[in-house]
Length: 135
Length: 135
DNA sequence: TAAAACTATAAAGCTACTATAAGGTCAATA
DNA sequence: TATTGACCTTATAGTAGCTTTATAGTTTTA
Ligand SMILES: [Zn+2]
Ligand SMILES: [Zn+2]
Ligand SMILES: [Zn+2]
Ligand SMILES: [Zn+2]
Image 1 (cartoon, rainbow over the protein chains, first blue to last red):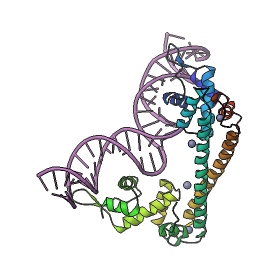
Image 2: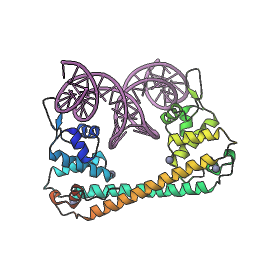
Image 3: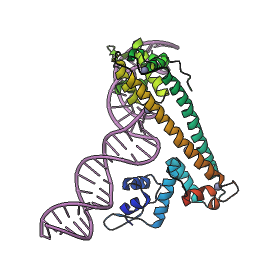
Image 4: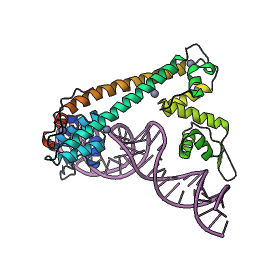
């Protein structure tokens, strides 16, 4: 399988595949005489794994870590589970932060209606006055 | 006021101030004979405005847009309010996406306990099998 | 006077790609 | 046969919003 076929199969761009190879997430495939990369099914599985991790919001570093655990199949999976727990708490704190932000933005927005001049805009005034609860 | 004092006053790094100047968000200040930047109170207010916008999650482009409205104080503030509305919906869709993600991650995590080998890890299996509801 | 603290510019690094440029390879067609 | 088009190669730059590093000049302090 050449790079274009693999890309279509998994639904990524060819550059992304080369990028993952360069980042050490995908093992370098064999090459044809002309230099073209030749992929096997294993590569397809590896690439699909990476993509599913990315959809779950895992960073490339976290994916790399997961791969290192996979290379040692008889270790206990504690570290894998812990990695996921950490990631979940990342996501949760992002949610919390964004919810607080939304609240602030909504109350800021409520301080203006559309029939004012910029000079008297409640939104701009709200930002400028800086009555913001930081954090 | 020199750059270090301004930085301390507003609570940013000096490089950040130079960066904002370079990005056109902060007007270039006068210089001393030795080339040192000299700031006024106006610069302090401008910088504080930028920082409060950043805390609200506005992008530099959005801040730039707000500044352009401020330069035209007798226009109606419709565009300002609309910018904020857009930003609020950005934030809301981020929250929605993250909440869906959290749900997925939690259910994935529930498919494993800590007493397994990597080989049998429910988390890794869940990712590899790819039974993921995308989007 | 010499070190410490401050300032300046320019360039690289961060994340996870995406896009562009310039070129080599291959099969099919005119 | 020549050329088109689709594919492949590498290298480089751009995205966002800074942060870090390097290198050098200036001011303040001990
Ligand atoms: Zn994470
Ligand atoms: Zn308004
Ligand atoms: Zn926005
Ligand atoms: Zn497990």
